[in-house]
Image (cartoon, rainbow, N blue to C red; front, side):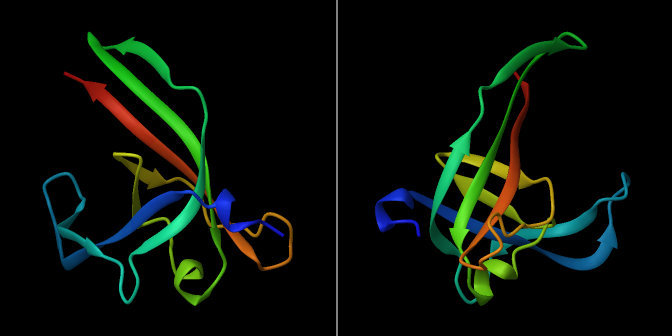
Length: 118
């Protein structure tokens, strides 16, 4: 069982409020809003080493990581369309949440952040 000190990262979960319309690129329009009823959690974010590369003349800095949260109704409602803010960065969820050890005590998300740097 994880001890409370292992959940040392404060994370915020946001969900896109969409009116059903799409922009010219096919993306749903709307603003990001806090997940309701609870939007902030204590979690364990483990980042992998960032990768910098030059693509099409622009420097790109991308990183991946995993985020573990205590399992509960609110955390199990988080899905791939939501986004996470942690450690001063916005992370996208890249996969369905998983139960890493099969005990339903934690839920784990694969995250990715970064992109083109001006």
